[in-house]
Image (tube, one colour):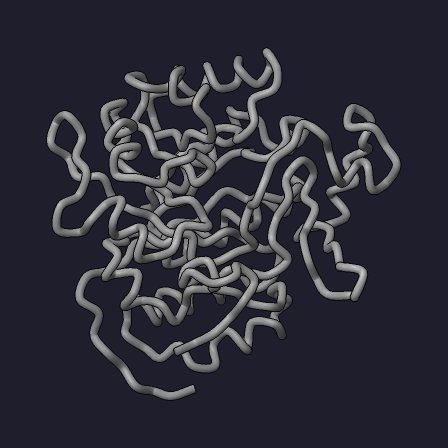
Length: 315
């Protein structure tokens, strides 16, 4: 690893996304205790994938959020990405009733219920692919946009140009957050693929996803890693890694970096992104060392550069 250093212009905030997998309660609490002493600026809390995963309840998340705020972190609650039942709506209603934290909306139903009640963050699963769409959502009071994971970096700069950002009716500029690390969420379904893999029904899943702290890898007939099953969510088998793309991220107007947690080695990943993006240190050799810490292998950055999503190249 070289010791070369380039001073960055403006700090890029590090935002730790919600844990997308089913981890035991003790594992979650230990993870967030470590985050309290990390370079993370923002921590997104809550369950966004499956309503059956309830290791922590809303009151637990709120208490955890207060602890992280006391440690100097900004906290955002996350709404479920796929609202399926009255119970899901009741939870969403309770998130709208609390007045401590902003809420990241996962779908249009969340937007309609939360708008005007709590500060809004636009999650990556909303279909926002144009400046006009972002402006429409800004009118609802949203002040932050997490771009869809498949949107190329140059397209981000067209949707929300750094020189002319979309603004709320009050004149506040919308900030852009890009997904820079983690397996990419590709789709959601009412069917639980993990339960089906184990020949169980969704309502009698026995919480088998607890066995797969980074999801269940699916390979093609040729034996190549292809997708990851995570309950009702389908993810990429590769891990999005934009550690080498600081200049392109800044040129696109990105001011916040979304890192999605993995079960092992995540704190080192977070430190490396801070070192490269904000301390100006070299990215060379850092990602290759992650595998030894248990970080899922096979980086990709194709979507960011208008190529096939699972491809990887460093220019």
